[in-house]
Image: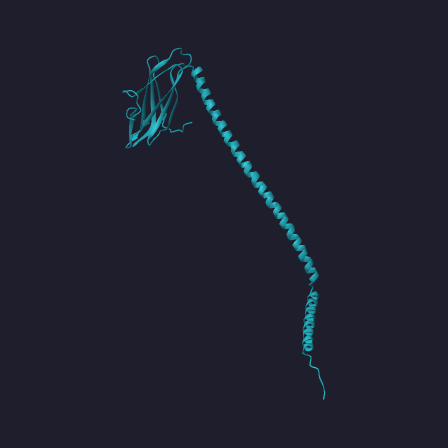
Length: 235
């Protein structure tokens, strides 16, 4: 009789060790093949570390650039606002300067007329929008030189010239609803200057072209002028 010991775990261990050794040999052969082909695992790891370091540097630079860009945009917005404020103030100052120049010219004309004539004259005429449709505000400035010692009085005749149905037509202040007297004239009395104002409403279909003004005074020669119908904004 022969006695044999049966040990299945030993066979399994031997098989597992064999498989592990085989895989290890295959991996070493694979790595050796890549090394022979110019590939190095250590070089690859080194390149990855360099790439990661470079990526971190680029991210830091990108964050700095973003912060710089945000600061630049903020400064630009501040500069734009400051520029707009300066431009607005400059525009207001220019408007005030122009207004003061006009007033200075106006008063110079009263003190010392350019033509040397100290009689009655029309200094300014203006048409501005009214409060409703086809409503307008007429403004007329009458002056006389300070050389005149007394006051002047009289009346202004205002007629609006235009077309209706392609035909020439003139309408008076009575027809435009702006007369303050029955005869359609506007009375005035002043020593140096006076602003005459009238609100008018134009009839339907009437297209204005000009405004004819005649200023009459018992002491002085009548003054006649025609002004083009141009609507201006107040102020």
